[in-house]
Length: 557
Image (cartoon, rainbow, N blue to C red; front, side, top):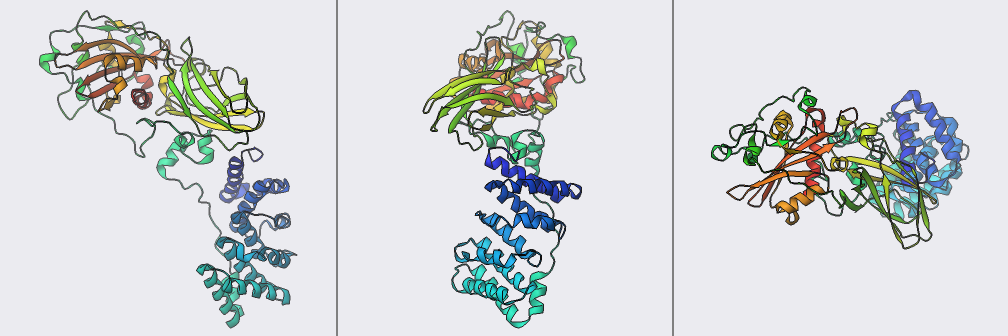
C-alpha cells in the first residue's frame, strides 16, 4: 500500500505501520525495517510520513533503534511542519549520539522566524538540549541566537514565554535546567484507534473496505445529490417497531370477507418457511389490540385479482457523484445501479474528463462485500477524451451464484471499488441498497398472501412512514411506478370508503442455497397525506429488513 499512487492512502498506510510498531512490541523490529526501506525510496511524502512515525517509535522504545538515526538525519530538507518538528525532536533527543547534530540544528534554525509555532517550539527545546548535553562554544552560540530570535522577533506568546523560561533556567542553574529539559519522559501509548463506539461499530462491519483503511464512515466516501432518510444512520440502534396502526383494521371494516386472497406459492412454499420464528404469530403493540392475521388483506376483498406491473425501465438507483481518492487524471465520476434485461444488477458509471489528456479506464475491481457482488469481467476499455462524458455499465455476477452474507446485510452496503486507468488507480465508494438485488417480475396471485404474511416474524417487522407524501408517489399509480423501478410488484390495491388506498406488494431476493427466490412482503396504506409501508420477510432473511426499509425510504423520496 505504501507504494500506491494515492498520496493520502500512502500516508495512511505508513501511519498504520507505525501504529503496529507502537502497539505490538514483537512486531516493532519488522516495522522499523520496513520504514527504513521507505525512507530509502526518497519519495518526499513517504519520507516525511515515515519521519513522523519514527519519532513516535523512538518515544515508545527509547534508545532501542539508534541505528536508524543516520538515515533519518540525511533528510533535512523536509518541508511539512509536522515532519520538520518530528525531525527536530529526533535530533534534539539524540544530540549527544548524532555526529552532526549541531550543524543540522543550526541549518534548521536559520529560518526560525518564518517557521510554524510547532517547529519553533521544537527547535527551542532541541537547541537548549543540545547545549546542555554537549556544552561548547559552538552549541552555546547556536542556543544564544535561537533564544534571541525567539524573544525579540517572534510574535507567538507561547514561543516567547518558553524562550524566557529556558533563558532564566540556563542563567540561574544549569543542573536544574538539565533535569527539566533532558529528563526522560514516559513511553507513549498508541491512541490512534480510540474511535467513538458508534464509528467503531460501523468500521468493524467494513473490514477490507476503503472505509476501514481511512477510518471514515462509509457514507463519507460519496456525495449524494439529494439525501434521503435512508442515507444516514443514527449513532444508536433503531428500536424495533411494533405493528403500525395501518394494520389495525377496525372490526366493522374487517369482517365479511375471510379466505385466502393472494397466492404466492409459486414464489416460495409454506414448507420453505419452516425456520424458527416462522410460525403464525401476532405482533406486540402498545397502542391498541393486536391485529388479526388477515389484517390488511381482509380489506382487499375477494375477486380483486392481481395487478400486473410491467418490467421496470428506469434505473434502480440514479447516478450520483461520488468522491474518489486523489488523482492526477482529472476524472469526475458518478455511479448508480440499474437492472439488466434479465433482471441482474448492473453498475452504471459516468466519467467526465476535466484533465489535460485522454484517460482510458482499463479495469474495474470490487472489494469483498456482504452482497458478494463482483464484476462479471474486470477488464474494460473506456476511453474518455478531454472534456467528454462517457457512460458505461458493468455487468455484475448474481448474488445467487456467489452467496450473500445475510449477517452483514443489516444496512445498505457501501461497495469499495478500484478503477485502474492508464494514468493511475482511483478508489471510490458506492452505496448498494438491497432493492438493487431484487429479481425481475416476482410471481404472485391472489390466494395465499395472508398465510405467508402471517408466517413471517411479526417481531422483526419495520415500517416506513412518510408525511407529507412526496408528490411523485402521492397516488397509487405513482407509488406503483416508484416501486416497479426496483422490481417491487404491487399485486393488488383497494380503496376503502374513507378514501384510504391499501396495497399488497412483493419482491424476491435470490439467495445462495435456497430452493428459489425468497419473498419480501410489503403492505402499504395511503390516507390523508400519509403513506405507511410495513415490511416483513421470512425468518431466513430477517437481518435484511432494516436495509430494505432504507431501500423503500430511498425509493419513495
